[in-house]
Image 1 (cartoon, chains in turn brown, cyan):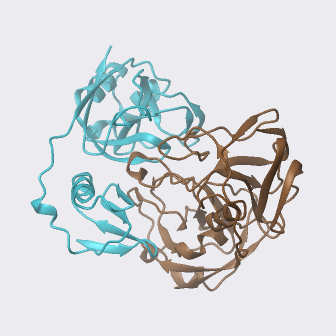
Image 2: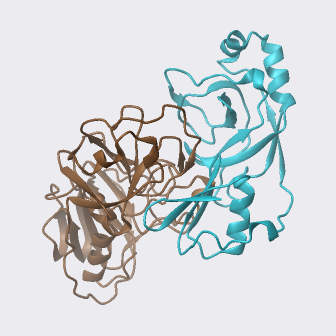
Length: 260
Length: 189
């Protein structure tokens, strides 16, 4: 058992999410940096997609009922330690820290996943002080290399690049990550992308990594709790291999896109 | 059929009858990760090559009809009457007189269906300032759509009434009460 002494800024339970239900309006959810989740789980002997804690910018303080093997990965110096008390601290070099415990966090699955979905309210609530978390049965720890991260993200053009006057502008400028970013989307700031047409696009399905452009011309990079349909044109989509890096973008970071 | 890339793992297909095509694709290719109908498109995510789908050959079961009892006492009835030049009674009669089709789901979250088939006289723009809080079960209209908010969320649609149906419940075999392609009628109570 783990007692939450202080939940930090925003700490949620995340696994690999709920793919397959987008047609019902259910976001994919799951860890925004699934590579760090998998690495952390491996370090403590769990299968890669076992539920862990995803801490945002400022991590939680936790107290364990018995000494427990814990891995910290993502936006921190990756490490494994046996803990009775743990102060996760601030994120460094990214936005999200994964706290993986041997045996995994034991939570009630909803549509096959224990992930907290901030858009739709599915899954457990974000952590609060005083919460008590159950831990599953541990396995045998392994070894894993730390994930590498990049601030240059590969992007596949479209599906609606033809709605913009100069779609190449997306890749010829640098974009700043604003503070109004969360698990639903990362709001970017930079010179606005001008539209070639001003009529309204009929709503269509959205994927994680889509760069959706609202009327102000500043793209929103959709993360795991994004709505499954929407009516703003998508100028390009971040390559699936670079989504873990996108999931670590923190306010103030500068990001560039390269056409794949 | 026109196909556009939607990332390295997805395609956006521009089709007629997206709800029908999506249901057919899901049935023929259960291995696909996501098949998401939109207003004029179907998004497909997974191992897929557009062009090799025999869409016309697939028979689909008839749509389910869903009837919702509505208390027409919404906060925007007078405003909609003003915008359309109708009386409140006429707004209610016209809204409940139509049969709607669920074009697609999404937007504010699980179970939110975009219903098409609204009478032209009731096509009004969404509110300039969205409300920060719309209770679950609220029936609204905006542009070419009607819909019901499945749970409390912010929302910009014009609100006509409320229903106490449960629109999304993960413990049901069909978690969403309304699915794309279903027909929906509103009955005043």
